Length: 131
Image (tube, rainbow, N blue to C red; front, top):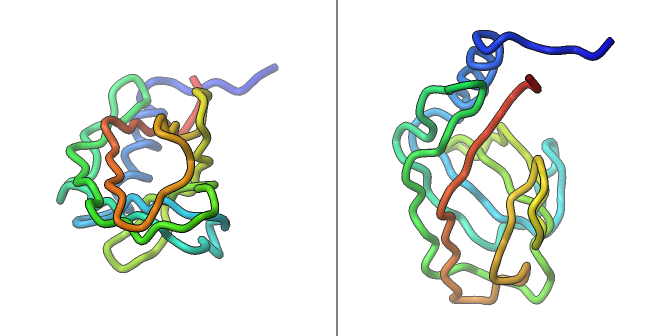
């Protein structure tokens, strides 16, 4: 038997996780790392004061995300991204790839961020539990 969750449980879990980001969090693109050791950031995109709207059908959509118009960049490709508090505590760690798939951010312009590049996030959703 597989595990399923009610919509109310999915909404509650998603809202609880996104609330941990708090006010003035960041989306950071990184070269490597994990939740406990996030690695070097090459671009930092500030989140709205309220990072995500309320979850609907178990998924929360991020509010406006400000572009990083002067990324530090690096010759190495971006491997992952983090959503974190304004104090730098990682709340969510995810893969970054150049093709679509679940549980990842897709970078459409390639995975390498150069010094001075502008990095933009046009949309971002988060789901804590499967249906």
